[in-house]
Structure formats: structure tokens, C-alpha cells
Length: 300
Length: 310
Image (cartoon, rainbow over all chains, first blue to last red; front, side):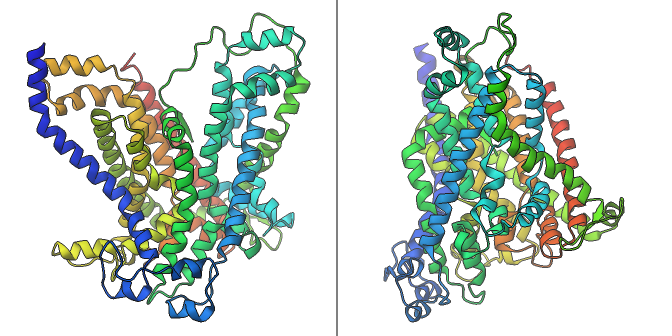
């Protein structure tokens, strides 16, 4: 046995070095664009067009961030290569945070009650209804976006938060499916004991099921937050107005308003890097949970 | 779209609803619990799906009343070269994206499986997937810029000509496909990685004792035992891949010379730039049916391949 092990080890050693090199290379390719984005955000636009590719910019500057955050005057920003029409970052950040928090709270909350009803409560047509809900997973968003746009317009909700939030707020088939799977795994004996003690179904859900489910609820909340933060098609359609414009939409507009002959790359990279910060915060706080939950349930 | 991989759930002794003959009970509470989700589903999934099919049978510009035209939109669609072109470009995108993404993700998953359990490595590899599509589009626009892009800088250092990538009608769709491969490969690798954790370690050890090399281990153990997971991952990623929109909308807007007008973007243009809602809905309905057929086919493959590990 010892002979085999040492033989195997000797044989695998160069292979392992090669494998580590490959993994390191893949990680480099994965992360380097973000390093380069940050590096450029601290560079003046003129230096970009001078052909300086050093990792540390020769003449680092904060002007791009002060432009994007609205601390620079129009003259300053035009001098730095901007278009003068700048991104009102704080307003868009506020909008994006409101949007994301509302979607997370609504989807997780309402999907939890529905998932509990599907997992544990008894009523006619339950399994049929659940199957119908699941078919919602199959519908491509572009198909429902057309009628939903007409509906939101007819309600007079274009360029309002209700219009922006309405399709996301009450449920997604995925969230219900995800939580139902977990609720099904909770031993019914626990609930039976509480029911015998006289607790109603609502009390059981509120005082026993929810506290037992903080882990999957948190996982779902993190995943939902990532998806809401990424949402683009619907928000750029019904949230064009400045007052409800999300960061994503604003970045798209910023990219398109930048002159194609000499784009405001430094400004764009500064804005893009600010968009990435919340993602990194999420990863730092919830990294282990997130990474492990991708093992548990894959979503797209 | 969902798929559940790994981590068996706690065993249940009875199927739901068949619990020790208790009287069927709490409909009032149940419907109360269901009410918000039921409203959400009815108003924003069920009704628009039905209405979408209805719109596809009408001529409607969003302003006047819709006018019933039967199957005219579908007939026009089948005769529309741009529609077929959009489908062809989408197929091209899906093939390049899914092909490269699946191979790279498998490679990353195997490397992680053989080398490290580190959460840090797994978190790092998934970063691009966490970043919004719009941000990825803007960052890669810069990285791949013809004049000042870092990738072209590297190409020139290596002695190649600089490329236009997004700006070249021959390269644009492949560029978008590979950018999204870059964004999704780490995430997909984590799905494969999770699947690999279900493969018993002693199979590898036994085979290694018999003198099998890494490639043989991969071919003879990992790949066959991972097949159910692979099929599930493919189903989910192909459906996602067909819905490519954000990157196109931010980078090329369907250009240059229509080279990246994928089906999602064509539907969007018809609906919201030209206000041909009926025509757009007909194409969306066709895409919907196409995805259902594709999924059904793949699920049949899944069922045919599910007996490998157990």
C-alpha cells in the first residue's frame, strides 16, 4: 500500500504543479478585468490614450470618482474627458437599493407563506396548483414583458416604483419551489407537537417554521438580491425616468451617451467599479453561504 | 429555472398530504397564505401568457385598439428573412457559448475537485457571475477596445494584429458568446463541482491503485457518473443562453450590420422601437414553444441517463 501511495505521489507531482498553474491562470483571467477596471478608474483619460499599460498608473487621480459622484464641476469633468452630462450616482444607488430590498422582502416573504401552504397545509387542488405555478418557470421573460408593459402603462405606472416592482414583488415560481423543498424536509412531528399544544397554523408557521428556516431564507434572499441587482430588461423599459432609474440602467445610458470616437473610459470604469462594490460586500459577508448554496441549488 | 444538485434532503416517511389520515383541514389559512403569490402568479405570469398568445393574433401598435388578424403575424414571420437570421445568430451564440462554457466549467470543476476545497477559490471564480450583465458589458467593451483595449495590447505584445471584436461583424457574436462564457463558467463550474462531491472517493482511490491516470479517472469515473448533473446543467444553461439580451443591448445593439441581432433583441426592437406588438408576440410565442420542445427533449435524455450512480 505504502509502495502504491508513494508511486502515485511521484507520478502526480509534475501533474499537480501543472494543474495548479492552470487553475491559477483561470483565476487570473476571471479576476484581471476587474483589476484593470479599478486601475483605469484611477487613471486620467489622456493617459489611457497615451498607451500606458502599466498596472500602477503613472499619474493616479481621483477625478473620475469625483465626477461620477457629482463633486466635480462641468468644466472639470469635460477637461477630464467626460461629456459634462454626469451620472447622478447617489440617486441611482438609492433607487437600486430600494428596488433590491423591496424585491427581496416581497419575494422571500410571500413565497415563504405560499411555499408553506404547498408543503404542509391541506386544501383542494393543492398539487395541481403547485404544478401550474411551476410551469411559470418555463415562460421566457420577453413573452410576458410585452403584455406586462401594456398593463403597467394602462395603470399609469410607467416611471414609478410600483410599476418597476409589480412583476417581481409577490412571487417567483423558483422561490416557492426552493422553499417548499426545504419545508417538506422539516419533520411533521415538530409541528404536530405544537398543534397539540393548541397553536394555530399561523402561529406554527411564525414561531416554529420561520425560526427553523433562517438558513434557506437567507440563502434565497442573497440569491434574489443578486438577481434583482442584475435586472435590466424590465427596469430600462419602465424606469427610464431619472427619479426611478436604477444603477444598471444609468450605466447603460452613460455608456451610450459617451462619444464613440473617444469614449470616457475612465469615467465608465469608475462608475462600473462602484456598481461592483455592493456585490463584493455581499460576497464578503455571505461568501460561504452563497458558494455552498450554488452547490445545493442551481438557478438561472 | 432550477435544478437541485446534491445534498439529499432529510428523508420523509410519508408523501405530502398522506399524513396519518388526519381530516383534510385548513383551507382558510391555506388560501390566506397563498393569496399574495396567487395574485402575483395570476396577474404577472398566467394572464400575460394567455394575453401574449392573444396579442400574437392581432395587429397592435400599443396606441389604437388591437385588431384581430388570425395567423397573419406567424405567416409574416415565416417569410421574414430577419427572423430566420435572428434564429441562426441565436443558435450560433448558443453553440459557441454552451460549448466553451461547459468544457471550461468542467475543467475548472475537476481542477478544484482534485486540488482544493478552498471557499476562497470558489468565491473568486464566481465573481463575474455576481456582477451585473451591464457592468460586464461595459468592462469588456473597454478590455476589447480596438485602440486602447488591454486584450489587444496583449495580442500586439505577442505579435498579432489588433482585433475589433465587438466592432467586427465577423467576430461580434462570438465575442458576446465568449464574454458570457467568461461570466458564467465559474458559476457553472460550481454546479459541476457540487455534482462531483456525490461521487464516492473510494472509486478514484481504487482506480488509482490499479494504475489509472488522471485522464482515465476523468473519462471512466467522473464523466459517466456526473452525466445526470451534466444534463441538468445543460438544460438550464441552454435555456438561459437562448435569452441573451443584456450584453447585446449595451454593447452592439444588434450590429454591426445585424451580426448580433439575436432573437430576444429582434423581438424587443419589433415591440418597443417599431411598436409591432402582434408580430413581436408571435416571435416570442414561437421562442416559448421552441424552448419547451428543447427542454422536453433534454429531459428525456436525462431520464435515459439517470441510473448511473444508483
